[in-house]
Length: 494
Ligand SMILES: Cc1ncc(COP(=O)(O)O)c(C=O)c1O
Image (cartoon, rainbow, N blue to C red; front, side):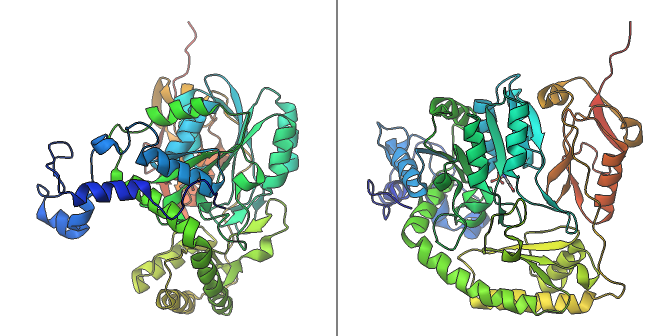
């Protein structure tokens, strides 16, 4: 990627805050730590004096509010060019802010949208904010691994034909496990129905910057794309980007308004500078750095595959329904043959070897890798996995997966009404048949089993209990012990 209009080797926002700090100006503005001078010394020691010295207020020196182009608008334009977008917005409240903004802009009060049922929780949170009404599409699943794959374009086409009033569809690609959906197919069927396709590419901020990676959703023609830059692309935690494709189906001004009301009036200059720098790195050195890492990972995968009891979720999945590509910057182990759960495997790796994966599921352990990996770190990973497989090996054959939840019957009440409606707290077993006010997920991976507006079923309750018994934590529930749940108060006759 990368365009010719701007110089991708510059980082205007980063350069502007560095220039301000270098002048040693008299700072009679927020933040009150005044470049770190007034901060607790232990904080200065931990973060480094320079980090605090570059933590500036909005509006200083016209860096972000001067006449355009200013350093902020230039940095966003450079990001748009690098990603091949018409327009890019920097986000300082994660990709979550992007999903919230997309829902406000594209799923307004009472309007129907198609949304992948296992989307990140921020999609339903966005619908709570906007009042939009989801029609869920289930992705394909690998029932043996209990792992969601991508959406099948045929299913999307059928659903869009059934719901001609839905003008936007939200799907996720790549998955947490690094598998990409058939985006070309999904974009084709969406556009044939004049529906905007929004792709949550949070796990693929690096896609498009190396030929061996799956293509980016923007390059395939998606209308809007979210990248959680901090996940793999080198920016700081909580920073992300929202990109608009060359779409006539989405009003840029509507997204602009939504992004604005969802951000602080004091956005962190550190987060923004880190986005500017991450874009520069990807655009100018991404291909070389990613190439080196991809090459190293070929050997790492071979070594991991040779460990007794370990299988890899990898390129061999490509071609299955719901999987058209695979991101080699992810290592996903299937540990069932070891005879323990992924949760146990992760706990052992962390507790005994101080090696910390991104997440585990009942059957898998997922490691995020980036261009930061050294040979020594990768050796440490392989050795810890081999030792853990040896130490946890149990007789009795592979572990059985947690049963997949049957497809959701959908929200019988819009998420906003359920979330804001009058609630009562009841014992979990008494909630069967009632409408949930809460979003409850086993975490990881944080995909809600129950959403606000969905009817609570005996099956969902059993699934949540089974997930917790298998080692997941409960995320989003008002009662983390799952003894009780908030449901909509029932209308009493008379
Ligand atoms: C698919 C997906 N979308 C959105 C998000 C939210 O990203 P962030 O943590 O940057 O807010 C996540 C987080 O894991 C995610 O997995």
